[in-house]
Length: 135
Image (tube, rainbow, N blue to C red):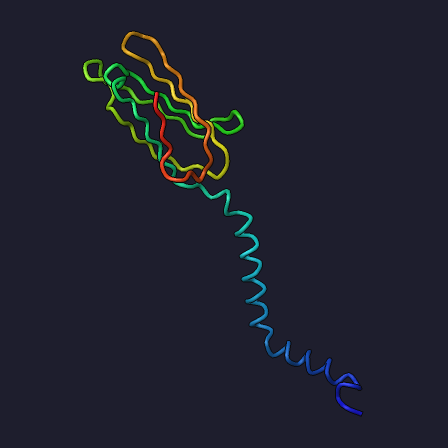
């Protein structure tokens, strides 16, 4: 009778596993970390850059309000005020950290004459490059 026929193969496998218990534990931990990380990765905030090109409207802008929304909830908001005599710069750049997913951007421009312009844009995070908005 050979070792395999009387269960010796099973004992040999158990012996091999016992000898590598620490290595198998590390491997299991690594696989668990990869599984958890792949689930959490989409929720890690990503740097997103917005480029608002005001162009010839810029000297008339007194206040600029940005709101980043997801499902109607504001994730981030920003209000910038500009001097009456110079207005806003032609290009306004804003960097914000947002988690992955669909984001609605609302931009309100309050002009020198008191009127307001509202711009909206939907985009996905992480955005491919810079998100550009023009009035």
